[in-house]
Image (cartoon, rainbow, N blue to C red):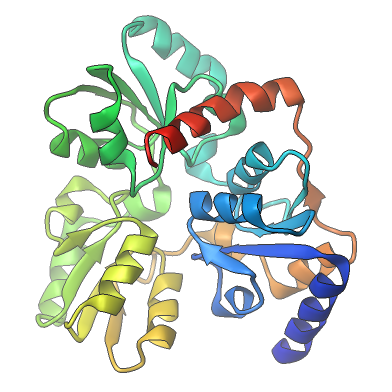
Amino acid sequence: MIKDVQRQITELKKRNGVCILAHSYMPEEICEIADFTGDSYALSVKAKTATENTVIMCGVRFMAETVKMLSPQKKVCLANSQAGCPMAEQFDKDVIAEVKKMYPDYAVVAYINTTTELKTLADVCVTSSSAVKICRAIPQKNILFIPDINLGTYVKNLVPEKNFKLLSGGCPTHARIEAEEAVAVKAAHPDALFLVHPECRPEVTALADYVGSTSGIMDYAEKSAAREFIIGTENAIVQHLQYRCPDKKFYPLSKDLLCHNMKITTLADVLGCLNGEGEEIVMDEALRLKAVKSIEEMIRYGG
């Protein structure tokens, strides 16, 4: 049944000139029919260079918005309109505007996991893999980092020459993991390397053998000579790595490391999107131009 749906999707996307993007947290059956799989920013760049004029995002809303910002001439659809991101949506523009007034000499550095509206207030965007590099590179000494306090703390510790103001935001999926849980899993698998996303709590990342983005974690595990790994990010990565490296063992940090917003998208949604369903991302051009500046700055700094 799954193979039949995958075959229909593959035929329709080729016939209609559609590029399918799948975030790494998507299940394996969706990644298999995607033209590109990766993190949110990498997918946006791929969409920009793709020859197809229509793009389907299998991910969450801010990812589809980022694709539209970088490829305004293309039709961009979100496979499931209910797929949001609690971290991206936890601060509205008015709240951040008031915080900016409190710290007028601070550059606003926004994690790419933010809404289009919040990006209009940012001086530069960052990804989890580029945040340290960009925070070091920007000329401002004072940084207001939004919205993830855990990623912000990780960057702050590695860039001590800058002054950081952090807000109490973050990814509820990664942030729910306690250090005690990590200690217990490490004890259960003493030969395994512990690979962690910086959206996890500082006391969890402090226990890690490697801290990095989703793509960084996957690359590290694939290239490492080690044979066992505990994966401290969304459990889809455990599945993908086991497919890619069948001779290695991968253990989830927690059964609760599941992003329900990511998991809401199904193969049926993708097929429906190819048949005219799904939600097209429509963006006011003035809003897009204001928001995309922070992403362009990220690209300029090599993000």
